[in-house]
Length: 126
Image 1: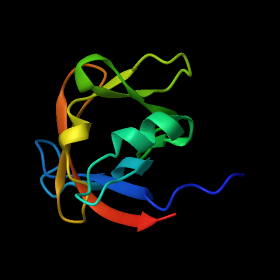
Image 2: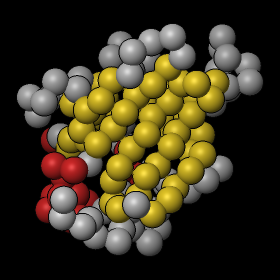
Image 3: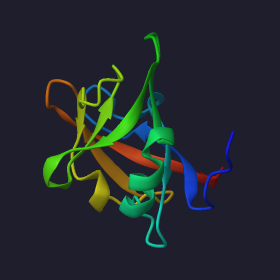
């Protein structure tokens, strides 16, 4: 496997507090592999060159993991493609504007368009 640029990170997100989960849920979230710039945002230029290795794993206790890839859509929207067809199966609104740093929060919409907030738990070099 070709070595990834140093900007690539493993990012772990866990569900933050919301109705039904007053303490959040560390068993529900995302593991993301993506390049980050110095501000902790997704590096769009590196994504364009290495998007094929930008992976996402969705996990939730008691459910089967879903593995897909990060995709960029029109208007700067980001999504997750679980079917390898290049079309977002799950909207991930404004991910390009989010800061991925421990303690920050990231909002991701699910397949039904419901927004959920996730806490950034880990950002580490690959």
